[in-house]
Length: 229
Length: 390
Image (cartoon, rainbow over all chains, first blue to last red):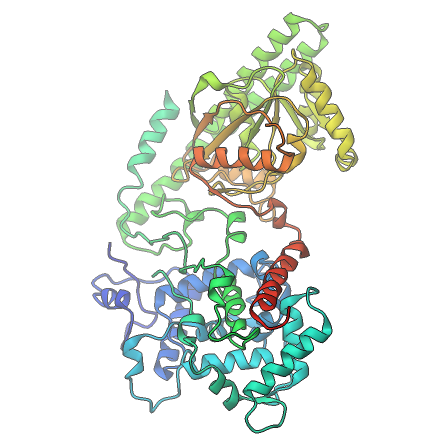
């Protein structure tokens, strides 16, 4: 069945699309106006982002995410707070739930708008094959392997000094194991891990060392969420 | 009769729509590989930096789409049924469709609504009057018979008032006296739908206002069990009263909704074990509404009861299927929780609903920390197993 969706600005040229679904949409035989004024802004947003080639969700994905955003936004003020995220049970029971939620909120702020929401989620877009060979002159897309790794690095590195110290590693470990492992055991796990990965001997992991440790890991597959359409 | 004609007209209406937004079964592909396989080790070490990827991805999957919160809002439709309220993902398509929609609005609001409202008013008044009158009679079989008649008639009127078309399946399994009837809960209308076909003793909180009047009137005619709000907190008291009721084989079957709250009819959530501890035979009933004609789900955080009823009365109809299922009894060595889960699975299977282990109370309350601790425990086990630390 053909999905007919209109573009926000009828005069705009669609940027090169990588999703097959959008190629189907490119028929555009029906002229449509969008009923919901917010949708207009959404599609323009998607297009401008496509122009910068930084976030690349398809139109249908943006619509889905927007309705998800509004359903999470209980206060209906266009932004999400930490409590809104905490209300998702599967996230609340995730040991790293708090860190993940923090990743959405920029420095010192308590509210995230839809733009920020999409930006953070964009890290988890799977890397399409035909994206890999695109020319790299523009800014790197958010879902590149390097950016995904950077995102993971930031989950560890709380104080944002570009190093994972022993304490920071211990904190994350403690979040993941709860009360089931003693401090000494955890400490030795952390020490051993740092020892193995640390190359310049500063007892902390820099981003380069982090990348090196994970070079054999299929980051693209592990840190991607596939949309069904 | 006119209700069926209305519904047939409604069936033709959804045809001329052209836009189908594929809702599929979800937005994203969920990866269900268990933690152990996902965090499979590259080499024999206990912890790796990549371990967080698993939790990270699970967290983000939950943010984009989770199993629980979507149950507390109305189900999305695959094709539009010409009600603005289900207009979430559908856009303006053509003039012709808009004209059809406008006609639909006029029919629904100006024609159906007053009709239904009158019927509902008649139904409620006759229920109050009828049950009060029957309540004056001394206890006896005449009273029971008359009260049944009154209840049945009034609830039939009320169902007509909502243009309800109910199909009952497996009537031979209808709940008998002295049993407990459990059903999945979607809205307060569930009770009326079930009483349309038989008489039950209801269990519920005492309300004020019109509901309170109805409750007080009906309890005189028929031994419903209405609790004060404070008493609900005392679970033993509740269980005791219910047990007394069940022991008396001449009393009507009790109607209980063990989910405790309204769920949007796409799934069945955790059954509270309280109703299953009472003993007695359980008669499970599955209720499934057809969302094409009207959304019966009551989102109590979004709409109050009056606006909910208004929405119901301005939908096309309430079409539902009710399946009576063979009675179940608690097995030897089965505790209340397992029994509750068994009944829940049976109902879910019959009604074609998904089964979820989550508590319906999560609509309002926060999830318990015990689940998080379970995840942490699993992960620690892995760490200890894989590493050199024993």
